Length: 73
Image (cartoon, rainbow, N blue to C red; front, side, top):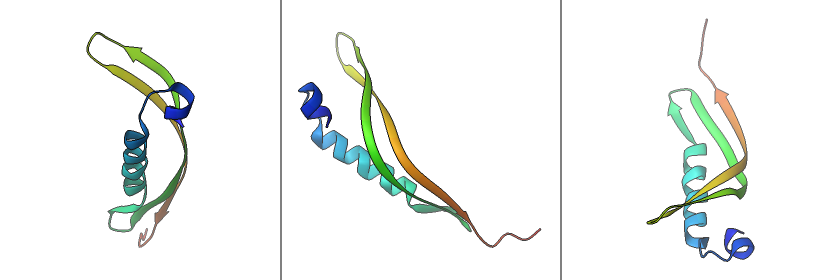
């Protein structure tokens, strides 16, 4: 997506970012609190240039659900 739209070869970074987000979206953080989700779209919104690097600000569209179990009041 970013690579095609802007001509910057970022496909490997984009795939690694999606994988990392998916791993963090789909795990149990604390006993009884679990997140489940999916990355729908990554969209670059800003390119910040400096003399030594480029920072890309990316908006992430995702679906995320939090499941809580085992709580008693």
